[in-house]
Length: 477
Image (cartoon, rainbow, N blue to C red; front, top):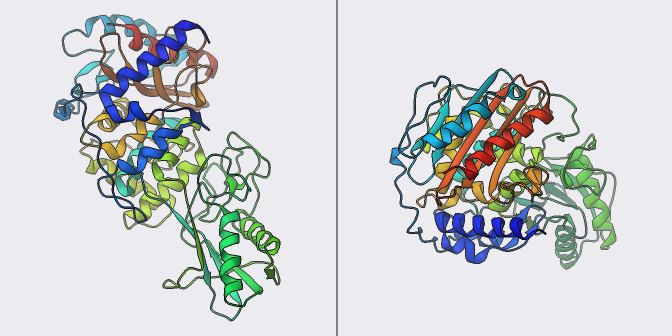
């Protein structure tokens, strides 16, 4: 690795850590499937309210360089060609204005750049215009679910006794990390293998060696199919899906999914029971578990903070849609597209954010009906940097690193002066390109930025133009 790139990454990590939390820097470790292991392990100590499965740990201490002064963050009216506010922002405006005019970005471009510690607007162009955000909507999904449940929360997959003698029921809890593989592909998470072993042990202890298997995936309601229809970027959305319904060994990216994720998961579980000496008579069938049934065995998901990081780093649509539904359920809404839309909007409004004109039609950004503004995205990112909101920290730690991880691995890479300095979420649909994230500028400030564009002539040129904008934010004093 070139010396310059290594220095940039170390410097950015150190400064960003001072801005966010000294504890995070001391815990930073290698990335694994788009997540830093140490950050994932520490996520259980970030929540004020705790999850249903774990008690709350100590809160990180705010860094002296990041005082809680986000009161300066406020809604601004629709901008025109682009303006800046506050001393020291003239150079940034001069750098960004011609780059934002690049025809490769299409005929509609919006922008927002703010100081994450103070909320001071440094540059904006039509900041409140609602745009189709594509996958940058995952930032909103992440903030909403973390607000609703806390980063240490885990989702349960259980096995309970059925209504009839010799019947057991596999109950889906909406765990997007659930896997049937003997070695979990992305670290700790829900394991059908472990669940089968514990179930077999419990059955044998009770003198049972033969069962019928039912499965309950009723936690989610409404259509399981996304409005875009069959798409290799997303499986049917069910509360009982192992390995994202992938029929191969892939863990991310587009691939054709199995047609019946819940049934396929139940059949995989039956095979695992058989391997452990429990005979399953007949094929698994849908069943309804009793609400008050005592579980025979339970497996827990990856902590929510880790799921959020994985979702953002890899732009994982399956995790995003599951977390949107979990937000709905935690808010007393149905676990459906409609329930998730209401719940996400309510959670963001509860954070004191102006969501006027926004729409959260899905959790992943695949739906063009989604609407967000550049200003809302930078406000979300600044809120995640607020020392008073440690539960939102995975929103920042999950962002891909330019030139190194996830969907930014090949962007602002190599000899780019911004390699390792930018952390941002990408968004791409046909004609729609967006980029929103954070960067530490040369003066040591943590800046939040968002650029949303529409009607671009092609994704390659638009992505290059967006990368130039982000690099300018990173390098301009």
